[in-house]
Amino acid sequence: MKKTIISGTEIAQATITSSQIAPGTITGSNIANNTLSNTQIGLASTAINSVTTAVTTTSTTAYSTVNSISFTPSKTGILLVMAFLVVNNNTAGDGVSAKVTIGGTAYGTTTLISSAANQNQVYSYATVYSGTVGTAVTITTAIEAVTGGTASAVGNLIVLELLA
Image (cartoon, rainbow, N blue to C red; front, side, top):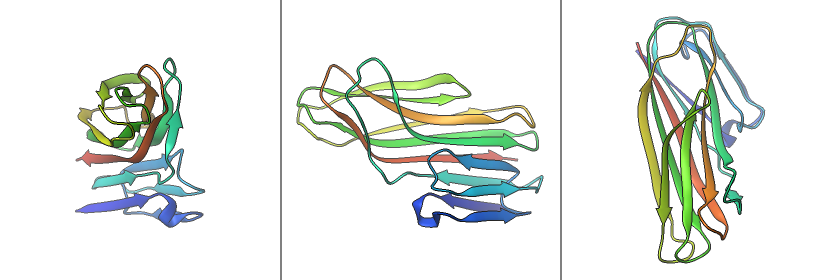
């Protein structure tokens, strides 16, 4: 049985508590005043976190966080991590560098260059991750400008699927 958790501004200032939501506690740093908690062990589950506010940066040396979600497994299993960003840069011929970090380690760093200003491009990354029961892991997406201009993430989504 799968249960889906959808979190973001559509449930702003909500608290969701259930014994059958997910096999762990899931929180998102960019979820507006939401608390997601659970005590059930043994269910495969999906957690979806998206942020509707665009994130922009002019930095070419420091990544800006777009979205972040933390997961504390309460059972042994494999976590499928999928991240999606829609990014652009307001300078033609420039671009956006995007990455995913899992537990502080960078994965899937990619540079996207466009010939036109503000041309949306899609960044996606998927991997499997096995953590330690009771130890929180944070998955974060981030962007930076490549050589200049303003880099923007205008759409984003992190999906976690715990494979029991």
